[in-house]
Image 1: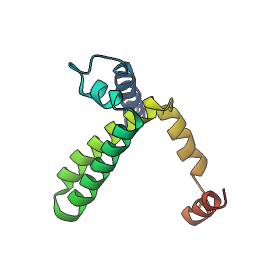
Image 2: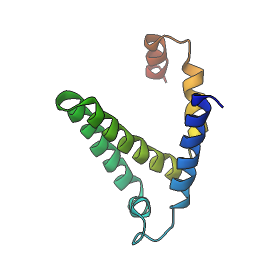
Image 3: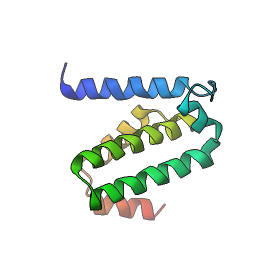
Image 4: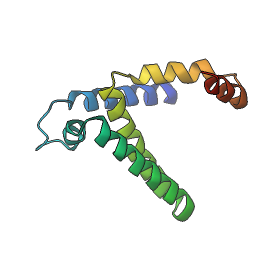
Length: 112
């Protein structure tokens, strides 16, 4: 098994754990607490975590950026689960963009 496959499998497993917390007891699960707040709470957490990544990038060590990035990805996965999006959906979108210049891809989104 390649490292890429191991990472892909881990991300899928983590997503499954996150998804299983939807509707769980918020007293015993942080993830259930975030789900309970709905999209607004989830979006606020993503914004908070994204800001922490930026601050870490500007003022902290690479290890701190890694830690904050993991928090951001975790909360992003909560949003995906809330909205019925799977990691595979995101992987496919990234694959669709492969080989396309970033400028072209951005222009195609701006014209929508």
